[in-house]
Image (cartoon, rainbow, N blue to C red; front, side, top):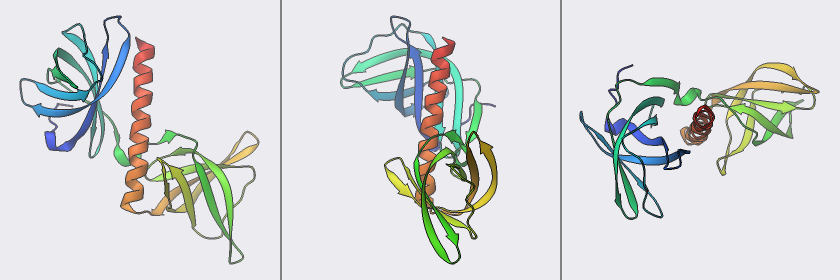
Length: 214
């Protein structure tokens, strides 16, 4: 798709480049200026940065609605301690990776599964196996079903989120069971915490793939 993102819509970017030893590196940066000729992004460094420019780079662009990825040209850098300014050529196109609410990533987070049975609530400790801002899968040693929709207490991103969840399906996972849920009630604050964590994990996975390919 054509690169037509507005500055107001971009939260931050990640720049994957190669250092002077030709090793892959990634830095998180904020866009300070963007027009038809160039993108100026800024990142804080402890010391001056030296790079071979121009060079091809990979941009991961985190927006309000999701994550984009593209390749473009790093034209030059400017050191102005403690900041580094990256002058980047606007990319010709973008690859849309995923909507922010549908980032489903693998991740083991401590969780409490509140099971309703015979009008009583039993708190069952477990771990998530994958999670998104719309649903989650948890792993249990036995197939434990709640008689009603359940509240999950998930420790993620240094917070505890408490979505009300509805059972979707289950499957055998080795000697355990994997139960999948969709959220039917979740605060925007909790959804945002999950979404940000998922986006960060997705970026880390992309960086690993980029490093492996190089």
